[in-house]
Amino acid sequence: MGNIKRWFIGATLLFLAILFCIVVVSSIYTGRSIDECFFGACCGFLYGLGLIFGYSYKEICVIINIYLESGLCLLSVLWVTWISIQRYMRTRTVGSCVLMVGGIVYGAVGTVVFIWICNHYYMPMNDAFDLCYQELIQLAKEYHTTYNNVNYIIFIILFLACILGNIGIVKLIKQ
Image (cartoon, rainbow, N blue to C red; front, side, top):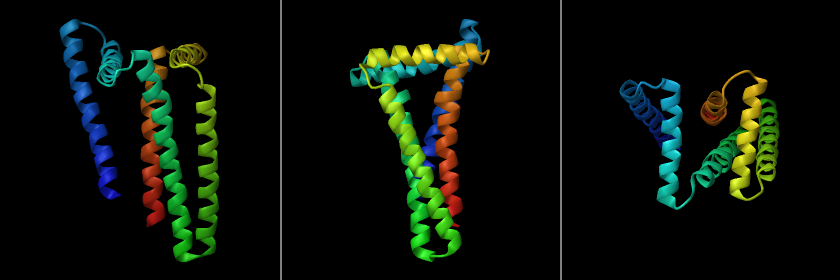
């Protein structure tokens, strides 16, 4: 399991480093802002994935940003749940019992959130994309920021925080 964690973290950091280099070079070359170039690079990456797998841009955005990311977050939450149960089964102490109950509650909450997301966007992919787009625009207005920033926060920062946070929790439980 350690190799999978290292691979995920390494691949993510390598991807972000390459993306950052592309963004900086394109910003210098085109004269556009780093934000415009970064968002364009992210959209271009998704568009390219869509072409490779035979999906439109809207479809690949829904698949990756909504379903895949929330599914990976759920898997990382359930991994914490599983490790907390394993810890209890090995030690059978009061502390590990409390940890297990917390892990089970955490897994249940993660599962409910995942089901809510899937249910909320249960519609044709083009409609799911349009709904998500409108919701992101609304969030940007409510928090006085840009559509791009809301995308960065939800689909990059919160996603990575969830995955990396759960990896850290598993590491702590195993100690």
